[in-house]
Image 1: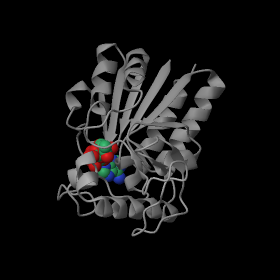
Image 2: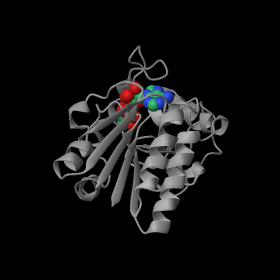
Image 3: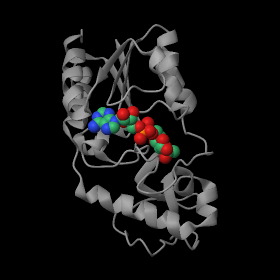
Length: 235
Ligand code: OAD
């Protein structure tokens, strides 16, 4: 048995963090491309910086919810039973880690900043002023950028993630719209290789045709039950 879990914004919604595609199609009032693309950053770095500084500061005011905690518990149970468990998230928040999980972040992390000139990465949740750039201490560049994988940028480790999807026996997607690739394609890979695929989300995801079981509802209510079911299958 090998479990691969993919989470999206919906898993953190019950902690109070806004999902990306709200009913108005905006992310906290902005078109996603405006704040989540290299083009947006080049065109208006002050706006993009302010946007991410507010998201970074918001981490201090939210807590992991029952879904994050249940996944961390399942990870520990798998370790005890010698079962491979991998958690991959599209989220840039740190709530999985704070619940006790080890997550691979496909789209980067709010906690980290990166220098476009010399590549230095810095973990920083102290300097949160939305109007002040953080310079690079290593090379003196005027401003670090959020260490976020924006639209049009390469997702790190995507080949490795595809291999995990090929090899897993149980694939679980939680709180993701199934619209953004390569994440949205992992379920298709898993299913074509024979894995049992389960999706938990408030709304039906775009890639529902690749799903064996759909569990509608709020993650904080549905995920603990789902994790208990998976834990009961551990050898
Ligand atoms: P979306 O905002 O596109 O989708 C959120 C999903 O979570 C939807 O399917 C909702 O139905 C579901 N949802 C909302 N509230 C929920 C709750 N309380 N419990 C369970 N499900 C709930 O977010 P993602 O699919 O994660 O990329 O978005 C994928 C990527 O698009 C993001 O990582 C981001 C974005 O643009 C980058 O920033 C590069």
